[in-house]
Structures are given as C-alpha cells and as structure tokens.
Length: 333
Image 1 (cartoon, rainbow, N blue to C red):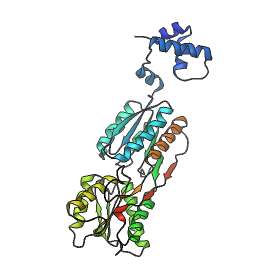
Image 2 (cartoon, one colour):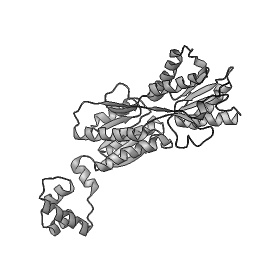
Image 3 (spheres, rainbow, N blue to C red):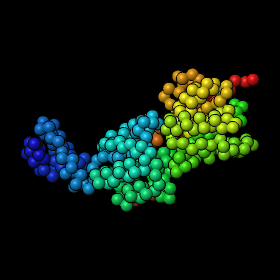
C-alpha cells in the first residue's frame, strides 16, 4: 500500500509538505504542490481517512438526519445540502430518522462517535438531541423544524403564512366548513400550519370548530384515516387543508374511494408541492416550499459555523408560494 513517504520520495519533498498539500494549505510552493499532486496521481495514493480524522479530531463528513426518506420534500432539500457540501470539500451521509425520536437518537450518537464535521437535522423530538450535539461541540443546523428552547442556526419556511394563504383561498372559493389535517402536536411545522389555518378562519369571520381538526402522522395512511374520520362525522367538511404532501395524497385517495367529487363536493389544498400535482385530475392545489434552497441555505450556514464556531446563531425564514390548481377551484353555481 502506497504511503505518504512514497509520495514524498517521488515528489522529492518532505512528508510534511505532502501533508500540507493534501490538507489544502496554500502556503506550499506551487511547483512543489504540483509535484506532490502528480506523484499522488501516478502512485494512486489514497489518504487514510481514519488516521486523518483522528489527527483532526473530526472527519470530512456531514450527517444529514431527515425525518422521512420516503417523502419527496426531503429529496430536493438533501440535494441542496449535497451541492454546497461537495463544493466545500465535504461528503454527506444521509440518515432516515423515520419520525422516530429513538432512531434519531441513535444517529446523533453515531455522528458524535464518528466525529462528524457537522450535522443538519430535521428532528421529530424535543431539544434533547440538539443539546447532545452542542455538548459534543458538533457544528449543527436545524432545518424545517424549529428546535424548542435552544439557540442554534435554523432554516425554516413561513409555515403559518403559507397555511393562512391556503385557507383564505378556500374561503374565497366559496367553501365554509373547511377542515385541517395536521401533524403530531409535538412538531413545530404542524403547530404553525394549524395556527395559520385558524388565523385565516378568524380573519374572515368564521368559527374555528374543534371537530374539523385532525392530528395525524405526516404519512399517507394517516391522511387517509383523518379524512375518513372527517367524512364520518355528523356534518362533514366541504373542503380540507392538509399540512403536508403525503397526508394530502391520503386524503385525496379517501375522497376518491368514497366517491366524493373534488372540487365540487370537497375542495383540497395541500402543503408541500408534489412533482406530479399538475398532472392528476383534478390537478392539486398546493403550498409550495423552496425545498432545494432550504438545503442550500442550511449547508451554507453549516460551513460558516464550522469556520467560526463562536458566531451568533441565526435563523433564516424562506417564503412559500400558493399554487392554485383545479382541486380548490369550486365551480360557480
């Protein structure tokens, strides 16, 4: 196996010079650096990543802990993270928390044990995991969900505003008994989107009936069950706002199975755009999020945090947009 000493011998430099070139230091004479890179290529030298991480007390890896790998929302977000990470010389390890605090905890423990250079996390739990990373001095950024009671770099979208826009649109379209299918009570996005829904009803002079709110699990099956529960109630809704894309799919599936025409008998708006939302019939109205930019901004904040661990934490909030399509456009009588 080729060693750093073999590279140094071929390039006619010292091993310490080879080390400085491989670590990206710019203080090396350009001619020497060129000889080192040529020797590395000719000898097919592979640096020992484990040894390098022990010397640096960290790897060149980021852990990205997302809450549901099956949700298309996170696909574009992770791409935004990866593009910035690659440009900064880091690689990304994707971890699926699966909306399970215990599983997320195991990934956090692994990130600490493996001396990850940084962590980007969308946590379904409380501040315990965030505090554990902070105590281990692992640079981190929270994404999509607001950590409670702890100050860290965070990237969010304007959840309450997006939900308010969606609900106001349903009201303006003539719907009056508008239901909300939201996520678990412990998750900030679910709470904020429910708050925006309630705010829109109040601002239009409508009551906020508890019997039209359902708490689900941000999954397709949960959306289906919540929609079925609403339809089986004494007076079913004439529209529904679902607070994430998978629950919207579940709600639409339930309406189809029950033979309830959308948007004639029930209007639908979902939160999170879906790649095929404009292809289905009726096409699906959604609150779109800048998913790629969420990941990109989070990665930029993490690179800044790694470079300057003492800087004051910041929160960046990105804007949503309402995409009006057929599922919420009630035919005029």
